[in-house]
Length: 261
Length: 268
Ligand SMILES: Nc1ncnc2c1ncn2[C@@H]1O[C@H](COP(=O)(O)OP(=O)(O)OP(=O)(O)O)[C@@H](O)[C@H]1O
Ligand SMILES: [Mg+2]
Image (cartoon, rainbow over all chains, first blue to last red):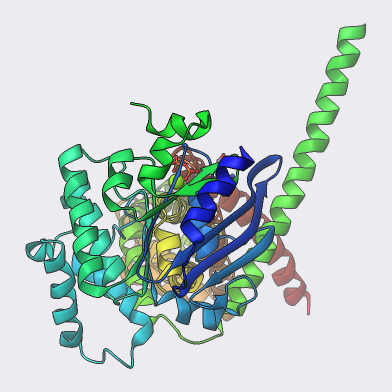
């Protein structure tokens, strides 16, 4: 097991001198007796698309929540955009978070607000930048146009389909032009065609704004299309790393289990 | 003999366990209240959201409070009438009903109605926001969800409950005067004049202060249960449900303390 991991890690890290955007080192997190993360390590480089795959309940969402400070790890280092999240005070954390876009697993649109208000919500913190009401309109429109839903501005979330909700949530995640976008299962619960659309949008957003992206998924097709590099989360650790092709070719049964049809 | 002993044992263990849970819960709730006070005094203040919540609280319960108040006033008067007539004291009706409604019945009934309406509403709203990660989403976008969701709701309940109580009282008195008008031929004017003459500040002020506390308790328990909802959609139902139970229980505790304290002031 460790042999495979060693080998694959070395092929990826060789010659990498790109700037590091996220670094997780020896991350531990447990809930009571349920040990979820057992020393998880991961690095995300600037401009990179990194996919983290793992079974349902393996702790992917927990990992990504530690990354934005929604949960604090029991121990370990969480470094985002060069800053240590764990030891940061609230003010700095909020400031840092405006550079991070987060797409939640279930979209998490505010259901008492219209689509427009949903998109304006992240701008509340930056009152200085957006004084007038009409200041925000071009930004909202741009973000919605990016996901092809400019006409839904005044609808309530309950009036949207699941796929549309996901797209609005994507628009909300990118509205402040973040440097880093975190996607928690962007395609889960969607039909294959809608899922493909979402993946297309993610790619076009990355091309347009040059963001780094961390994508959590258990959808192999999504991983194949979008990943430059992959990390497999098994038993709470980064069990294997490599490109899609490298991992598909691996002989380790635990790795193979992910790609078997 | 043995099974009985085991049963008794299990029962005792159960009681100890429940008692322990109860005190832990009270501790958590107190911590939640402290967090509320800390956040409430620290800027930025969410005035717009506060107004919206005040409107929601009023809008949600006004009709129900009015309907209940009317019926309580009606029933209270109808049922005491025969007794008062027997003692030849029916002219004391406005004084008696007025004082009991303003001092005790109005605030308590209104608060109980509102705990069913507002506490459960807060529990369900915040609970579903928690379960669907909307609260996490707020936090990630740099808005303090405790301040935006919890502080505004608790303040709204605290500010609105006294108003609702006043409304409820007035409607209850109207219901009572309606009975007196039809059965005893007492004019509305005479009825209300008598009531307002009978009432002193010593009746109004403690009742109003009490209402503020009732509102606070309702808002606090509703938000506490909703904000700390467990994972999964089942948690939302549990949050709404337990919020009402807890709020109603605490209302009686607060009422008891309030009566106790205002009694001390009367002595002075
Ligand atoms: N707040 C919490 N309290 C207690 N246990 C939790 C909490 N959050 C997550 N867990 C537990 O941690 C484990 C990992 O959960 P997580 O949500 O990270 O899974 P996941 O990999 O995202 O799965 P999925 O693909 O289904 O989203 C699960 O066993 C879950 O029960
Ligand atoms: Mg998850």
